[in-house]
Length: 281
Image (cartoon, rainbow, N blue to C red; front, top):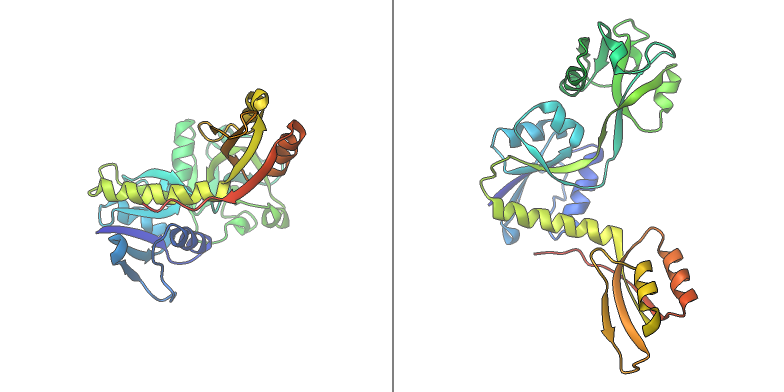
């Protein structure tokens, strides 16, 4: 039975639970439930603190887990990213008073407050910068006002919290993070892990694309399929009316209306858009 860690709370939890449900797995109904066995799918879910998930997976206690890329890299454990999941996206950056620094190389000898010391130290070491990294749990924005640090390194979403403290971001992003499926480099159950990866990947595809069917004149099929190239290539089938062919292709949801307008402009007929069901192997 595959043993998988799932975030028990926070922004990662709800999105991870929704994705697992869409992939056909059983999910907990009670927030106090710590372990859930899905016998039909031969998988067992453990609901843990997001920051602890990489540690359990890296130690080999669990086979896989869903956590943030930032938490995985901060942990420094022997686990790797299997699949980006497309939710809980965020950017990790340095911030401070205006003019305090322009890039990471300006932080030599400075005090940096963060909740992700492992991630920050690794980023600085790659650039040959030695600094005093101060670990703080929770909000770090006030550490500069309180004299604990010269700059901070933190997740930046809208930037409102930073502006309220008189801080601005600087330098290149340290990391662009999102929810990810992780596993050890040598998983004990690679076949079952691959099934989980494929099913989650199926959910991502179903959320990203729709299936589009339409008929187009034979002499216009090349132009039409350039508009709807699909993920790999569209399916083109003959019709009883030999002047037309049927085309089926997966089209990104974003920009779908523009695609339809272009097809209608070519004289396509019978355009049908269908939601794609997530793959459940």
